[in-house]
Image (cartoon, rainbow, N blue to C red; front, side):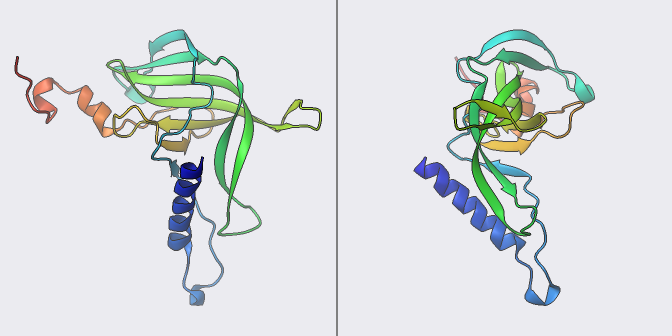
Length: 189
């Protein structure tokens, strides 16, 4: 946890440095967070121990060779570390552990190698008696293995509801190329 907080603080310091405007240009502007990096790998909510309930091609936007597995979490109730902008404080970021209920979990793969997860979840709160209370509508997050290490180090907003097109990392694109075009050393037997 100490390492994760350190990584988050390094990310925050980068955002603050990039977001600062010279004083002569006026008030601070709202920061837009496109993705959050955890070099140790995010714990994808609901993924640990989840079982596959459906396996199918994912052809949105003409994707070829991409498959999606619908997963059923062992327990849909979990939490996630979130960074959000603060509506009434331009330039400020809030870090919080958000309780969630995972309502849909998809794992994306190409040639049998997982490269992304999409998590659909409802934010929750826990009352004084320990009961979970839903706080609104579903939201979607995407987690990516951007370098082929098996660590899902990038978390992004997965966008509004409707067709979802996962970002295809470069290492995944190379998997779809013929072996002689992958820029890999040849394997000799």
